[in-house]
Amino acid sequence: MADDRFPEEYDGGQLLGVNGRGAPVYYDEAGRATFEGMATVDGVVGRENERPVADGSTVEDLVDDTRERAGWTWLSDFAKSHLPVGDDSE
Image 1 (cartoon, rainbow, N blue to C red):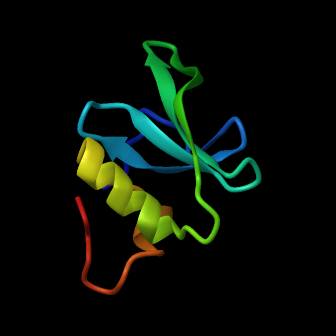
Image 2 (cartoon, helix red, strand yellow):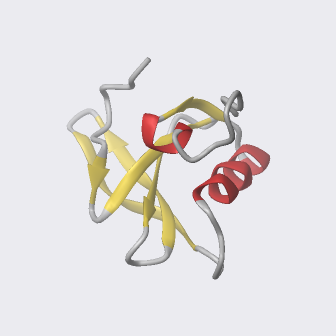
């Protein structure tokens, strides 16, 4: 099920999902970082909690890292497409 509160792409990032704190998490491949979108009633309006992505990290690694730190309430189709078959990781 999609989470229509947040855009699939924002500020150079691709939506990975919504973490356990309710924040949308994006992956900025070009900037080699993940970040949480600052969600407001008007939508996403900025970046916070930006974390650099280590060389060689995969989208699966990023999903696992967030799961360990905050958990997930929802994963995007983009994130799911980078996980092993049968691993919903939510």
